[in-house]
Length: 124
Image 1 (cartoon, one colour):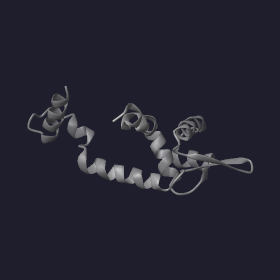
Image 2 (cartoon, rainbow, N blue to C red; image 1 turned 60 degrees about the horizontal axis):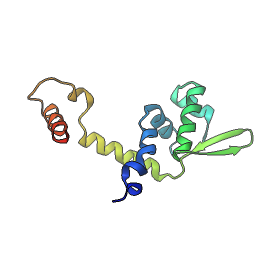
Image 3 (cartoon, helix red, strand yellow; image 1 turned 180 degrees about the vertical axis):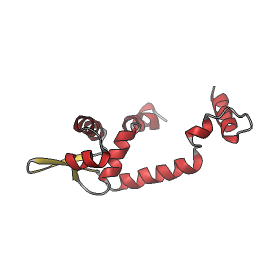
Image 4 (cartoon, rainbow, N blue to C red; image 1 turned 90 degrees about the horizontal axis):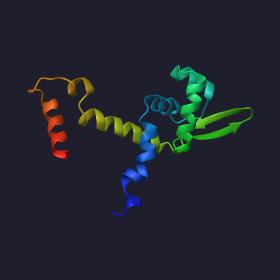
């Protein structure tokens, strides 16, 4: 596999944009509709400056598109499949990745802690 086709190179910027919880909230708020910034602000309870900052990053990563409608700019997902991908990822994570509070337990008999330690040790 060459460097350019490596998933880390192809997906890195998108996954970095998705790593911020408020950006995920914004994407989920959009759903399958185009919404103006004011709707996103009300739905997320984030300040306007934060919403604008996150929308810029999402737009640069190709995760939202902007449409001018008169005096307003509406933001939409570029493809409804993105929402399906996020939902599928959420389902996968909830069924395969232990919750953070289980990972932090110090009980050596806890299978989640043991599994995490095994994964860490096998990669190092």
